[in-house]
View 1 (cartoon, rainbow, N blue to C red):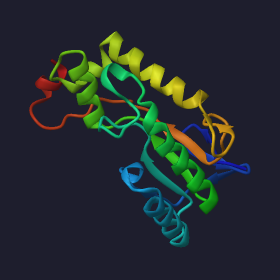
View 2: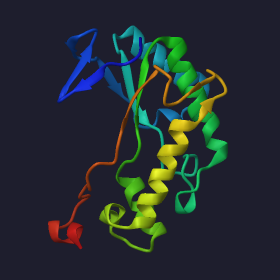
View 3: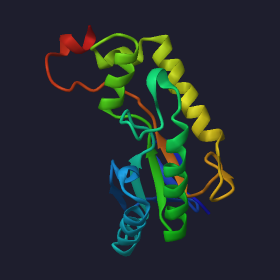
View 4: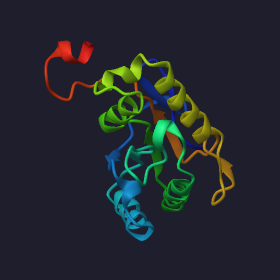
Length: 173
């Protein structure tokens, strides 16, 4: 079963165009396990098929640490979240970065400009390494790799710089 496949800009499931009912909870991974499971059950009861949430975060509890090193202690939180989503019958769409993460990568390379994330080979390498670690990880709770687990619907990549205020010129610099 699992999530739909992508064809152009459409989601396709069972050979037909598909629209998923989703709920966004950026900080779901920051909740304790019981509260996160209750949230997933409530989302399912409300008709959600997928929950969009962050996989990585620049926060202390996140999977990424200084210079993109993976925080091993945080893996358990994401493992539990994926297992809970599976038991509640909802998918997870994992967002891989947000603006604060772009700022964190920039700080690790010595810049105040979050747009450096898209130009600095070190930041790109750290991000690629984190994505590879995520996809190749075998979740001890579900015994499936993140790449093959149908509960993980997809990944939202960091595909564009976000201007968090200020001039466009400041973003380009």
